[in-house]
Length: 308
Image 1 (cartoon, rainbow, N blue to C red):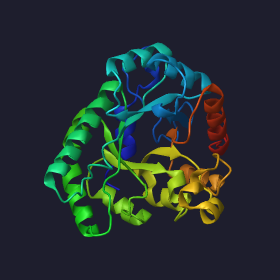
Image 2 (image 1 turned 45 degrees about the horizontal axis):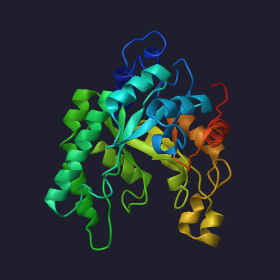
Image 3 (image 1 turned 90 degrees about the horizontal axis):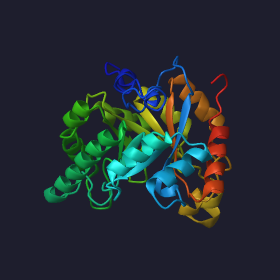
Image 4 (image 1 turned 90 degrees about the vertical axis):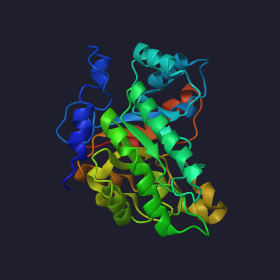
């Protein structure tokens, strides 16, 4: 592709971890998609809401770091004092790889009411600015939500138009808008997802690939191969087709990382083929120190690359 997302994130975030070892400029993702880069191939993160102990931000960050995580991803809006977040980040030595736009389900960019779409745009703008402030590089976004009675074609066109209005701001601030594959009845094939990303014609638009979400109706490795360097970050969870079939759809997520139907060796092979180096964020039920350490250990097992 003409658009080089790898160069964008590599350049835009070239000095990340050095902010904690030498106090260079706080850019959070210096190994993103750098197949020949130094440092670990995968950096582990988790969602802030998974940290079940600690009475303040710093204590929670300390717990995450002690459990083996390199970073913590926030919601936006989060209800947290971002100055406190930054202070805790620097004191503890963790990174904040990005934020999740938490308004996208309730205020989708394809809503028929323009005022609702405007609220969605405002929330995305806030998330982009929050991400920049805390030193992150991506805003996770659900691009549209299709339900009965809604036009799929309109969802495609409207979401591109509405999200596209924020792309110049993302480019200006050095933040990427990253779409996640969720059960939103939209972008149901990897080829369609790749085309959708390319519609924006910007290196600051890519994909936040959720490995577990795909297993219900596809194969993660196929999506990774099709998306290629559009994959900016990974969400890590597991899914069991047998639990889905025997206990109900959502019960499929009730399985630990590495114990479901995700073919992790195939996922690693696909990630290697596309040259992925970067963040993997756990998105599972959290808890205290012991639980978080177990999640980190499981991530290490399923994302153990030879020669990494």
